[in-house]
Amino acid sequence: MKITVLAENTSRRGLPCEHGLSLYIELDGKTILFDTGQSGLFADNARLLGADLAKVDFAVLSHGHYDHGGGLMRFFELNDTAPVYMSEYAFEPHFNSQGKYIGLDSAILDSGRVVFTHGETPLTDNVTLYSGEDMPKITDSGSAGLCTRRGQCLVSDDFRHEHYMIIEEGGRRVLFSGCSHRGIVNIMNFFEPDVMVGGFHLSGVDTGDALAEYAQMLAGYPAEYYTCHCTGVEQYIFMKNYIGSLGYISTGDTAEIR
Picture 1: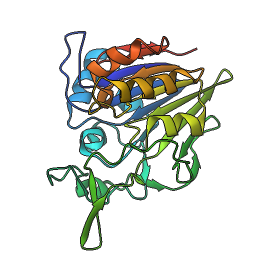
Picture 2 (picture 1 turned 45 degrees about the vertical axis):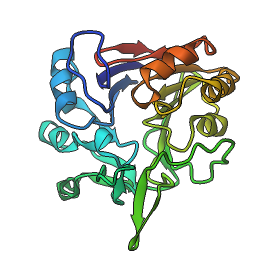
Picture 3 (picture 1 turned 180 degrees about the horizontal axis):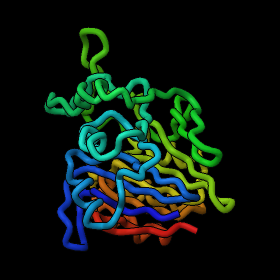
Picture 4 (picture 1 turned 135 degrees about the vertical axis):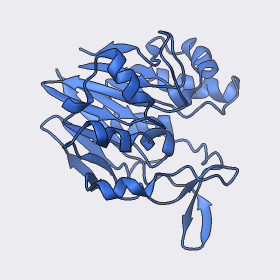
């Protein structure tokens, strides 16, 4: 499996970057687009990196935030056929702690390409989406001020719009989680993957005892980690002292998972 980072908060290779995430995944003759960043930047970088978006078989949106699904309309312009799988709750209205709308553009629905999912959704023989609705909560870091509207009320987001992709290849389980809003420790405990790829949503956690505790818990799982985006670079550097198998992937990077 080869993963190419089309968009991420940082860049080590001179490519433009933005707050967001987009991964181009190649395996077994299939090509998957996991998230599209917040703009068309992922597509510009795909061209520079030789990643052909027209050949993508299907796309997966990890959750309903603009910095993961903002480039979907650009993707539809470049690929005529691939469906995009997302949670049935992806289009709930989402807001940050300042009340700014951070959800998706409703024009995405007009494409006719959206496939809503719930529960366990097999996409191929070895690719499955999971809603994680029955995930036990070992740790609770709250919603970091993120909200959604239910009826006429703004309530703390429970992130039911977030789902996770598992790819099984060569006897290994590879987990993709865009932001891990439900708690990276909870997610690792639930799926027990061999490899985890994605954000930890720890960028707001100070580099102190609380972050050290998270890092020690993650180090307890026999997994490789490729983190990015909402983990935070400073937090990654701090946690690397505790997790020997922790790596960071930036815009333009590739990772080969065997």
